[in-house]
Image 1: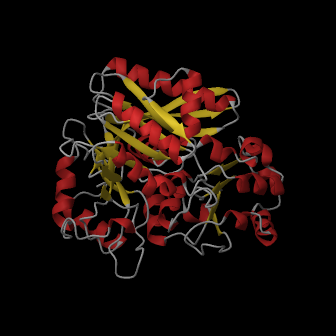
Image 2 (image 1 turned 90 degrees about the horizontal axis):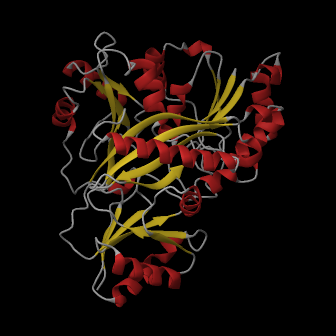
Length: 468
């Protein structure tokens, strides 16, 4: 038996909204006899859909909803994991064998609260990295400022940049980087955020192509020092989390391709698990593809080598588990690394459970898997309506051809009457591509005029600001 915990980044580090749907991707990792802990009862339609593909039976799993804490059922409150009554509930669910039945503790986010739960149950030795995570290692391993220091120590290439701990330092660093940057632009990064939501691109050339960039926020700088100072007077509290965290400022690399190299760190070493590509549309994460294609052999080698060195650096400081080394392939072919997600990333279920476990992308004939975020221009009324559309369009996953759509997480409306937001995987033959199938879904669901939706509903805002 394994204990699987569907948590997210501790709210003490970064505030999160409604994560019920996103954390239920835990179901993709479930095996017979596992115990799953979630912030709420899982969505029945999604569980049935996922388990039909993995072959696990619902009665083979035990699912517990942690007590509703400060965030109700929207997010698992770390304190709920060690509430005495809940610890006893988990202990009872282990059955007569008790702690002896547990082979592993697996959490989406490496929280100190998970380490405390494992200790309370007497299974801390089965939570890899428990000692490190119990002392706040999750924050250490996922801090973008720490990443730059670790990458520099490991000799892994990164973009020119600085770590800033004050507004004055940020003003000076921004000016210096703008002077030396070939693009005349920089990226500001919060220490803790994801999917480009915590990034802001500062540019002077309003004609520069930025649609493909993972930076949800865009700011056009006025010429001169005053524009930089005005920007930081407004945005330092946002960037630093009200002075809680350092801020990363680095050179912007236009025209680069976003890729990643995932690895697993254990007590005995590290191993590569998958590589993939990220695509951004309107500076929002649109879709990602595994396995990685379209890169040269030297770029692939550099990606794997740098990812392995980063994985070993994180392993050496105590991190255990899956991690993703994000990188850019620059127009000239050089690979530079941008961050490490030392947690179960949003890619693990795509390649481990779906691409390899269900589709078997390594078998003949060749297959690839792309995961799409439902675009903000789509209006999907419900999970059932989406499945019905897949059947009507002939796009539901077919095991015989190993092609079609598998919905990756439940479609839970964030507010009554609102269209649902979710992600779905599409398995396809590389020679045919995935654009035609996506276009058919787009024709069916794209009914929200661009620019009329509230982009803040799902994964952040697409703010554009100007300095005078």
